[in-house]
Length: 99
Length: 324
Image (cartoon, rainbow over all chains, first blue to last red; front, side):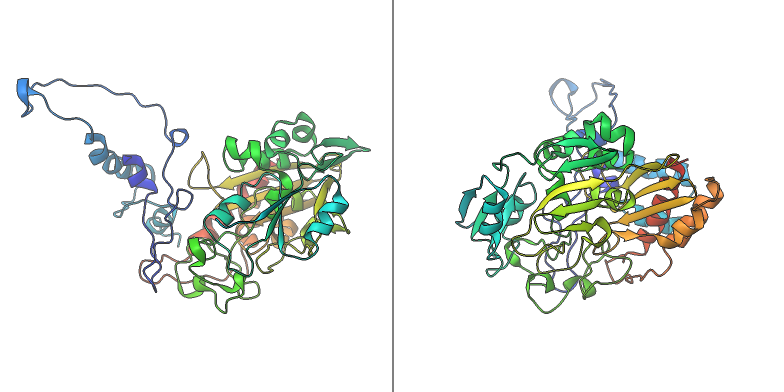
């Protein structure tokens, strides 16, 4: 989910009519399992959450952080910041001054 | 989806007769056709009244054979069978790689090579559901991509005022390998097979069906390769793809998804033919391949398609280096 936000997922509208142009899963490029590498996870049980016995929800945390992490990875790779989501090839080429 | 008649034909003559009036569509794998019909891409006039199933033709059009050095592939051969065929892989590497990189495993197990080369063009205005944009390709009078979001559209300008791209992965491989397309009426050079028609993407007439694809043996020392740039690995149409067959002082390079039909990169061919294949020469050939491009400018949220030129350059370079 986070990787998709970082790299591909974007609603594209026709500038003249405002009609959504990519309302299908071919043009709205939702990543599938084959596009994502193996995931290694570690749960840190701090016991400091606000719920009973110090529990806290973990469902969407990765969604909030991974696209930011991906931007750092892009900076690490090319030495330029891409400051707009999703970091499409077009934006990366622009950051590199190629277009 | 509307009502249509479904016809199972058993001979090619029956199929030709059923298609002669021009109000029927051919169905083999159906991976492009059924989706197109289901979401209502086509206008009322173009919506087929009957679907002609050619999988029931006997003898079957599903075969891969090598005769006198020439590869012959039946139109109904599954893409997966071509991708897995050791004969194709050894002799015509670019074609096997192209078939392998098409769509997803499920679609390759359904889709045929005949369907892959005859699929309708890709453009989100053309393909919008319920015929929302009645564009040129459907008998309308304008190309909505001209003033719209055209980030994935043609970088070599419009063909008959249409900016859509041909999305086939096997098409550039067939052009680079010098294939011929055999239909029920004639034999066409792969290079001349595609055109902008309403709503089709090929030069096929009404009642004409692709029956076989013939690929000549490559001269000794010629290597072929296919590369594809897409935004997803699992399933995606190409942003740009490129096939090359280089060796023996000769080169054939073909780009696709950059124009209404596959484009021979003749300037790149001249640059690399006979030259040593190295990083610098490949880079120069890549730059030569995109000369004559026409950039669709960025406007508002539309980034334009200038970025595709860089991708095309890179694809030509990669394809050339893969032939080393």
